Image 1: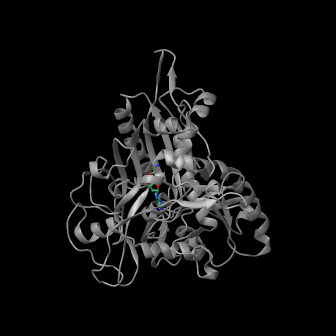
Image 2: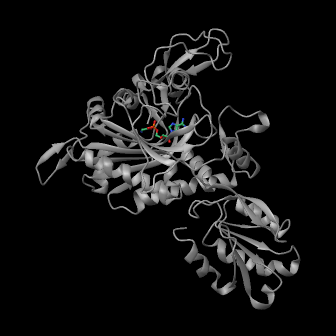
Image 3: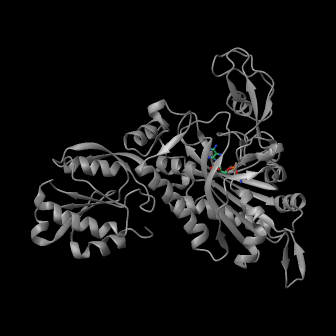
Length: 482
Ligand code: GAP
């Protein structure tokens, strides 16, 4: 959760209040390096640099066939948990471009900035709070900062740099045509509070959720899709009666930790971190971050999601600026009030990276000849896997094609599946392991006789012979929630 007076830094270890949640608390267990994940994403077409044929755009990434499935699955699971399975949360989608008034009232034009320092020698620019954290151990320690690019101690005084992207709407550029690309999805829920509340007929406690792109002109984007200038968020504003806000805040902190763990992130790699008073955003009464342990040296414990008690700051600010009534009228009590807001704010692109890190394993496993080989396997929860099933005819021979296509036609109705008849079966299994496909279905020459196929489990590598007529129900049982 970004604060307005010096945002929290990506890895804080000492002097902060942290808590790993779970019955057995142990050390983080992720060991893979970021460059390995970046390489896997590139070689398998998951995520790769934007417009690379033109040299790319710094820290801007495109999602390939597998990446878009993975990211959409992360979002789908969030929506399912936060909206579909609840009767107290509804969804919405706001336009990305918004007028100045919204961002003036929300405080973003005045406060949404990071401290920027420029090196007088090499002219590179950095976030001062990040340098302070890495070089002086954070906190408010005095000391001279060193330029990480040229090593000189000639960094200037920090200046506040506003992170919002500005553009113009219509053919004439003037101050009246200025619009802003939203830096968070949250404001959509505040400015639309009355119409969504009225039309959905919800009463506090209730929430409004939204997923989608946000834009921040980050001074130092980096660490792959961890910090980018264009990214996706999954945010929910939960409107509650004042006085019940602290309990609801704790409820959502626990619920969000459970969401990551339920989708496969090991508990020891998650923790919550309480914000210190001097790093709270301008709107927050209390904030905690859900952090994930990214094992890379440049990352460490880093924010996945922020959970803030935003009080009635936003509704009151928009009421004052717009002149519209943003209160809720409680008919039973005969009272009108501004609800307090609890906000779980997650990053879809950042969470996708965390799921990739946590799923990545290298194991020793016997090959077809029984010899031990190392295999890379993405042990993604099947709900997140880009493909749920791969259909693999044993050979490319025409005789197998009709049966294999018949099987593909059955499974593709229900799940994202891949049909692959190239290379040896061993190599195809390895490829599917590497992209996290939970089940491979092999159609062989016996299939023509017994109308059965071999189903291989990604994690155990055990194989079952299953009748084609039973295949769908066999997979439904093993792919719950997919
Ligand atoms: N409405 C509150 C809000 O936007 P935030 O902590 O600034 O809070 C919420 O953002 C989440 O959005 C973060 O926890 C992170 O997962 C994601 N996020 C923020 N800035 C990001 C960036 N530059 N690149 C990728 N994800 C980002």
